[in-house]
Image (tube, rainbow, N blue to C red; front, side):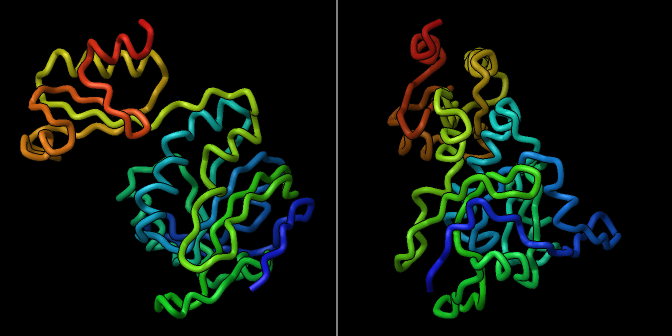
Length: 244
């Protein structure tokens, strides 16, 4: 396997079969890229561990940041059929991300990034990469190293955002554990919204138990806020953390 950086090339001319509602729709490469500034990230498969836990969620989380920095759309491409991609999008709660099903692997093959994953029973899939595309021309590619396993070091959302805007302050990945009717939880969410930080919320009794909260934070009080994996604590500590 030898992957060639296609920076400076045009994206492949391909027709995609898309399922929208109860209808089949044909869309071409031009429909997605012509006259637009696009960030595309490609991954080995929907529902797979790294793709579901990190790759897609972080692009989804930073979607508004991409838009604020001149990107017209963020596209997730995988060699999966349109039904799988649509279902995965719903499960991931990622309505803003455009899911591009390269079901036959034609786009990936023409680009030179269709690889054998027979050892996993996947057949042929896309290699993991990201790229910035301007009006159909690839301005920059970030390609994962050709090493065994599933490398994920350079095709992340932060790397391509830093390329687009080297001076950007990237919002942190925030998780907040709350319970219904909690005024301090409401305060914490308001502070995060004022800062412009998106967050993933987990509600007591619905998404987690007290035992889980103790295991994660060592505490029984809510809210409990984490940023980039670092425990901040409750709403008062969050206020100090944000410098308010």
